[in-house]
Structures are given as structure tokens and as C-alpha cells.
Length: 122
Image 1 (cartoon, rainbow, N blue to C red):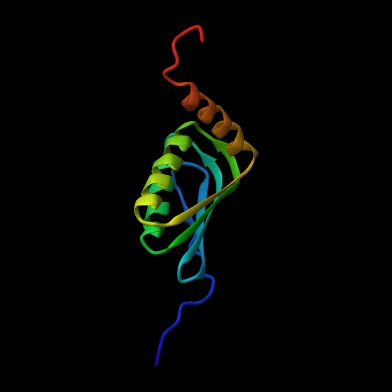
Image 2 (spheres, rainbow, N blue to C red; image 1 turned 120 degrees about the horizontal axis):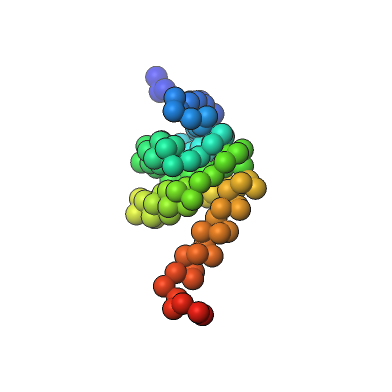
């Protein structure tokens, strides 16, 4: 007899420190959809990074759904860059879905990253 995984399983995780909820749905054996809602601030970015990295070792494709994130701190940008690098090293295709709060901060952080190191007055 062969055991099979259900096509969709959800494992909610709630951070005790802040209002952050994370859940994973497995569409098939190699696709993890990590859904995040609530506030992603300086104290919860590491919680999300650890949670997402624990799924990276189990899949070949990951969707990180941040569309329901209400607050996204600048530390979230660094967390996404770290996750992106780890996914590349693990040969996992990462797709990030963003909502308005996330897009606003990413736009500012990407602008700053592009202009970092420019001489003053330019």
C-alpha cells in the first residue's frame, strides 16, 4: 500500500510576538504556496525567513504570497533578498506576490539600492 500526500495541506503558524500569520499549501509535491498576513516588522522578518526556508528544502517551486500583509518594514526587503539567494542556491523557483504595503517599501528600497554608493550631489 502506498501513502500519498493530500493535494492541499495547510499548516497555520501564528507568531506570538506580533500579528503575523503564515500558512503553507502544497499544490503538489514540488510546489509550496506560503501565504502571509498581518504585520511584517523588524521582529517578525526572521520568523518568516525561518518558516520559508524550512519549506525551501522540501520543494522545487515556491510562491510567497504577501498580498495580505498590512505592514512591511524595510527589514523585509533584506529578508526577501536573503530568501531569493537561498532559493537560487537550492535551485528553487521563487515567485513573490505583493500587495500595496509591500510594493511601497520594495519600491523605496530598490531605488535606494540602485543609488547606493553614488557620490553626493549627483
